Image 1 (cartoon, one colour):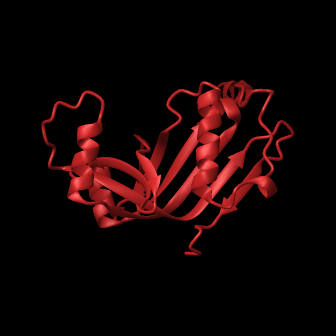
Image 2 (image 1 turned 30 degrees about the vertical axis):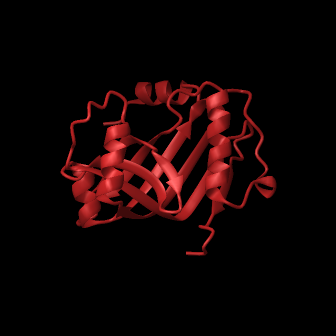
Length: 177
């Protein structure tokens, strides 16, 4: 049953600050990882809490989606790295359907970054090193901890604008995949 009061309440909520950064896609780096690093630095400078946190969307073999928040670990030639337990829902979904999408959201800057592609598990050694580098690590191994890399087939940088003509800047991977 429709709830007009709730709808009005949602419509009245503010979305983005009045002052937003400018973004000119023509002047942006062609490398999505380089542009992401620039935007991350700007998010840090603006005091955005946990700018390395992102929502990871996956789906099971039936196509039922799920998402949860994770932390970006690195970006290198392997891809955009994150970790979770192989036995977790995310781990099981990635084993069955190794595709995912990341979404970073920095409300204070009116920015989002979406990265989608295939996901590969990284080595046992890399996974163990990631586990050991976690804050509060006590040296106890975690044999189900898995470091993954998302290999982008699409990266989109989204900049909100006060006039609501938001900018979407879509970049394919540098290797043309």
